[in-house]
Length: 102
Image (cartoon, rainbow, N blue to C red):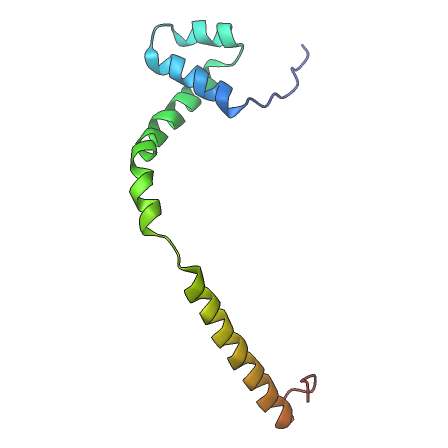
C-alpha cells in the first residue's frame, strides 16, 4: 500500500468544502468522495468555519477603537532616545561604561 503525498489545500477550497458541509445537502461520505478528502478533514474545516463565523460580524468596531496615533509613538521614541544618550554620556564620564562615546 503506497502513501499519497501530503497535499496542501487552499483556504478557498477549504471554505467551499466547509460551506457544503454546513448546508447539509450531502453526507460527509459523499462530500469526501466528491472533493477527494477525508471526512475527518471536512469535520475539522466545518468546525473552524462555525467557530470563526462570529468574527466576521464582530471584527469591524474593535479594529476602529484600537487605532494607534503614530505621532505620539514617534514623540515617545524621541524622549527615550534622549534619555538613553544622556545616561550613556553620564555613565561614560563616571567611568562606569568603557565603550561610551566621549
